[in-house]
Length: 572
Image 1 (cartoon, rainbow, N blue to C red):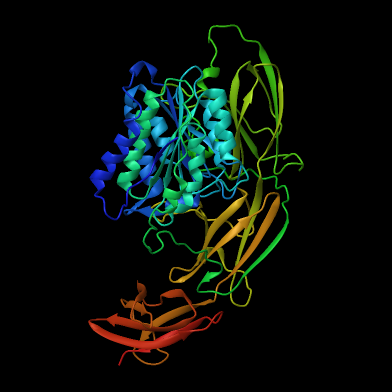
Image 2: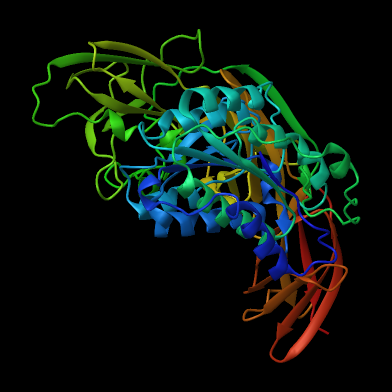
């Protein structure tokens, strides 16, 4: 193993560090023969900690930028592929996906798929390494670049996996440990590279990471497919003497809102999901238009699928037809879903533009298709719950039962006295729990109907309940369990307040009046215009200012939960 140890980053200039890494790695390789360029499989850590920042940039964004450049240039004739783990589901050790295969996909589609990676999950490092080797083209020298900020937390043995890949594929694995706060904890990743004769780099700055990535490309292009000769292990005593990193403030923090907002507690209950017969809620067509689905975009379509361009067959060769029988269940061992399912069958290989051709579509609960002997991607949707599976029919007919791993969410909203809130003043919205690098969440359901079941993949969702047009807003995170119905009742501590300006007590309201409702700190809560404006306000203390014919009138008032009231201002 070539162990790339950073000099003291507190004393060495960035440019010097960058040159030092490249020389240290490339200098031991000798001249590069362009004919020996093979495949470089980049394995990306998609665990939640990759949202942390280094030098003001999210680590995952820095990784995407580097892969973008590699895919755009195909530097030194390398075939570049990408595998991500932990990027699609929370805390799922089976979450390993081929984001971009090394061949058979347009660069633009591959780049879009890489940009769609959103860290959120666990770290099945060993499984990801094996997946990367399984989709690499056969007969070409194979290099794997692992970029991680943590170790395997799924019980796998990445070092044993690395040894197998070195023996079976003559693979060389390079490792970049990308971490600034506690880099020493990632030295446990070094034996992965050591087992294959690859390099290990501790990158604590953006420049160090970019230089290490470029050096890995150089090393991959120089790999001739022969097993790497054994190299001495790093000097453990020397590593132990490496200076500790300076104390830094936390670069990634977050919190989970539970019942946060202006109201009171959230009441949850769980029971088995009934099987409603109505037509399912379909995803936004703009995102799931079958005519425009690309490799990895949306990423859920290719969840855990191996898009193997080597499996393609001669299109002119005769192929027998086989029958494909399908059925769907909410969870493994559950009953078959009897209605409301939408099936789509795609070619398993993307076209030249990176899209997957839609071949068949059905709304039958247990459809049957007759298809030529080939490989296919089967996508099934049940409301907003969906999944995809790669199915091979080369050897004969197939009978597939697909488990959605899904549940249901049913929302209710009540007032302070547990009375159901009127739908006309209520908006219930469901978002993904994960936030992108800009702190934004993906909107899944803009206006959910109270009491109606929303079918969703198992996971955590962010729910926002807005009552009225002012400040009565509740936010909370809710968990949907596989095969279960989560019943959530959200209670708003608010009341409806009507305002009027009069010349005398009990008199007629004056038209053409402008209103401003202010918080105790003077912030504007709501503005309106008219003789009798009404607004739903969260409980608390307020001031209201009325403007009429150039004159201002003000009054303090309070709002008690569940007690609608009228505020009358006498123009004096």
